[in-house]
Amino acid sequence: MRNLTVLASAFALVLACPLVNAQTPAAKSADTAAASAANGKRAFTSVGCVACHGAQGQGTAMGIQIAPPPFELPALITYVRQPTGKMPPFAPGAVSDQQLADIYAFLKSVAPPPSASETLTGNADNGKKLFAAYGCYECHGRQGAGASTGPRIGPPAITLAAVLRYVRAPTGQMPPYTTKVVSDQDLADIYTYLKSLPPPPPASSIPLLNQ
Image (cartoon, rainbow, N blue to C red; front, side):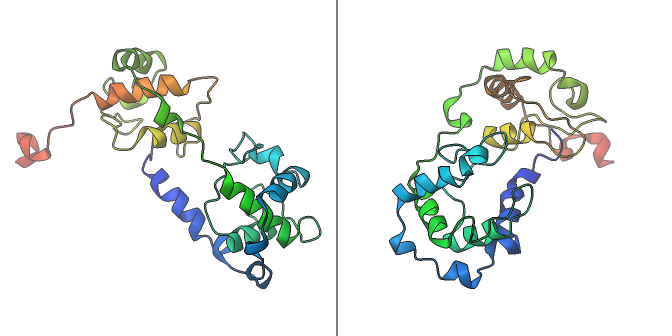
């Protein structure tokens, strides 16, 4: 679970991307007032958005969650025309600005799904067992205090939602753990166990560090 704090800035970096925030003349001309969520739902399917983002824009293994959309319509249109990452570009001939305005209206109408962190309750005792069973201690120490192979993770300084995201798609040397390997509930239990651990003593209380 190395570099957990990188998650806090990842979304901000996406929104800061020039391609995401740039407004082309075509994007500025989109008529949001005439947008139709019903038409957008049909276009979302016909254009093929569902294949990567799910029927409700909830995200799949192929693509991220995009409902409700994280940015405004002009930025969405610009990104669809000039995407980054794995998404292919969609020219106006494939999907018009009006269709994108309708799709945007549809995505705005979709209620965000509850996150796992909002529905899970962890068990510290089971989390302690899982922390050992999954080998977390091998990199992070028996009580998450850190080791030469991994940073301190106990008690965690980030939310359960951030832990879930990082474990599924980590950075650094940590391998990813899919839901087939470790479930969200197991991670909630491990998180609760780590939260139950006392914080490290301040450096000022350790005589050897103050000589």
